[in-house]
Length: 255
Image (tube, helix red, strand yellow):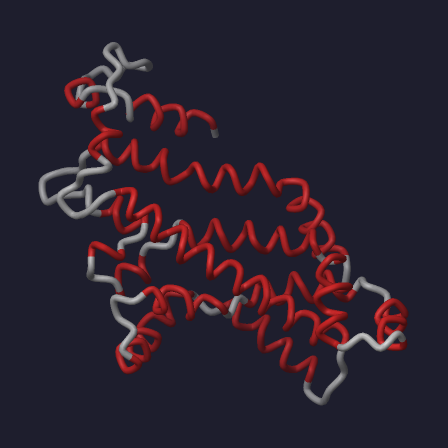
């Protein structure tokens, strides 16, 4: 697992001639920051702008998914209404639909609304996250009903109970959901490629895709860009790894 990361890292510091050299070297003989500097002044934009766009899109969408999935999970776990179980099974069934299957109808809808070349086209369709609803439902279901009833007796509203009682107790599941969704959306390429044409709105995967030209791929800049792109993923995991393990275990055992 470490070898690909190491190879990408050392390649980002090799000169263009050494990148193409054979046999390959395991350590740059003449380290250079040329590829890293090139990321800030590309023909199709700046990698710093791509990084900012990805942070905006993925950050806003992850927060929205956490809130909406927690609300839906709370309803499925603690409220009784006709058709609740059937509706929950419909949500689970949507996990089996390949995401690529939805691209054409989603694109037609985005065009009709006028959201092409807009961050809304990248954020809004991903707010419905069936896996997140499942994880939050499994976690919230383990919260004792007596605790919620006691809060109602004290005069707390459902929103107060949700934000001040349910969410703190479901923190591990929320962290797990945030990590899962952040990683998936940070690496998303196909949907942004369909709805975004303006280089100023490119996300990191779109920016990395531009390095592939007609006659080859700029290996050095791609390596530098890939290492820069993976830093937020490593940071998010390191911050929430304990909650990730706890949340996955809870989601798999509670029900």
